[in-house]
Length: 431
Image (tube, rainbow, N blue to C red; front, side, top):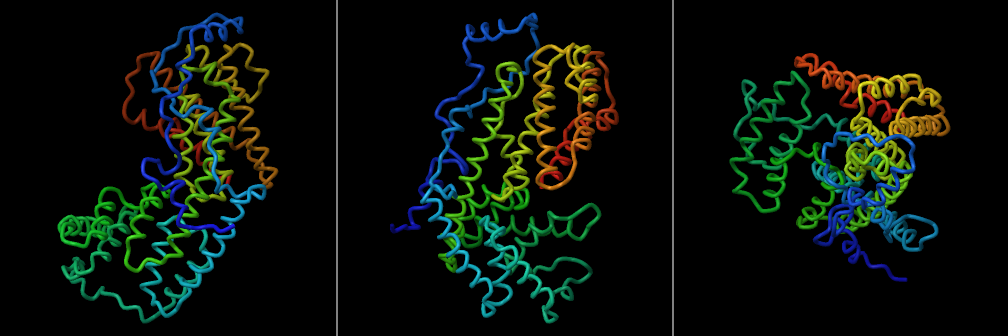
């Protein structure tokens, strides 16, 4: 069967589609559940119905049925002919790009520009070894000339403005500065002022890059959204490589299929927890949480990481949204600290469900860490979850006691209640 690469963009690159999936045409939400169904669900429990505060979160537009319906011809699977055919085409295009990257005749500057194109197109993970080899070779060169001697008295000189791409690269690099690197801070101010002053007097393709960078620096952007945007830019370049364009589009579609598969799996997990029936006051935003995890590690082979981090973020948000009396919240925190299902008898049913979801999910993650990586993590994960719940309890006490906290009090507790420590321990454990 003949396969034509020129049709590949139609799956994900057509106008009107988001970078990862099309948005449902109408909102779906558990908040639309009829009162009769709600009454039936409430009658299934013997405990009295307690009216709880609501933050009136926006309804979820990504319903379970929609996420389960996501399908793609680009899914790499031995059972799908199209997926295997695309995999074969990817390998062929990779070899062409590797040959270009290894071409000594193109010069070091052209090699560096090609590496930059490869990474911005979302293809860096396919050429890690080749990129390291090229960079190591360039780093060993002793004849690379610098213009430091022209930088009199530590000031940036006007002649740099002759190279717009160079100034743009300097601007992007300056955002990697850490505290105390004053030279890079100066470089940021200088390069931004220079780019803003000349962005109207350059060729359109370069102007798009400059405007894009001034809106938001490259390493702050979502990698796959950036790859989607840069594909159009690179395709318009005069010296673009056809094989690289085809590989970028094909790879984008294949990776999107991986992400859709992950979302379908996560939506089954979330539906199984049943929070939307028993804790309908809590946030139901699986897709935004998945995109958060995707921003941390977008490479397709890191599905395990993204799935675990999305679950963690969803649990953090749900626990944060628990509305209970001080007695209930004290009991809940105590049960989490004991990490024992037998200690939860005095909790209301919805908080029991919340604890069991946390208990089962974290223990299952710990089991996977031990099975796949040979590392026992449950005790360390538990410590961070206990710390988080204690931090939430402190904030609850402030609320119930009408305590006017100082900024120092708030920040000392917020460093834990923000959830970063929980996320980082899971991120480290799942890689």
